Length: 256
Image (cartoon, rainbow, N blue to C red):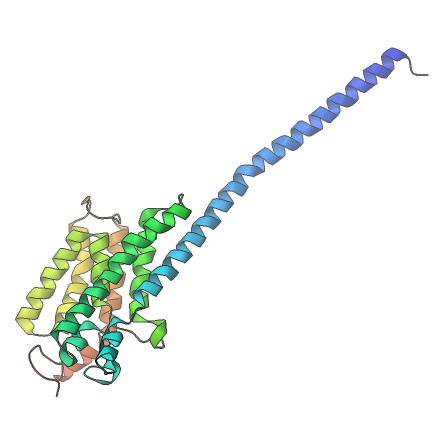
């Protein structure tokens, strides 16, 4: 038979066991909560970066040269070098439309790097502005070079890459622009100037490393510009072949 004192003693023991179990369960959830929170942050960042590259791609995919040709009743893909870039627009349609295409193509790169990150940071404040700018710039160039509106056949990305570079590292952009101008004046070949500027990009990024005006840090900037420069050179493979054959068009001369 259980006495009164034994009853209360057993009851207190049961309460202590219950409290101990509850404390252990609470500690278990507390240990797992930071892990879940970290996973959610990582997942949020991934979503933010995916949105950034898609948004930037769509900005870059605007086929400015094609639209300029259509406004004149010309399919730019069937005349001149058959490229939708500013150089072909200059040669086949005129300086006015060519200048507009050049500026808009460059602004696509600038807008992708500066506007897209600012907008997305309002929804994903824990993300890195530098990384958002990086993926946005790449997305804009891919959008221009492989636009979804023209069966993924776009331009060579020189102007859009220039806009991206000026947004990432203005001094590297100025350096590449000076090289481009020098080579245009010296050779009269836009393609040669563009290739020279593409080669200059990572070198300029390295030379100006640590400059506070850059929005993307060293050494990531050097690697990114080396990749973009290589892509620009690859997109000029037809021009390189014509240069080797002696059939590349010079400034001031009509295409033969």
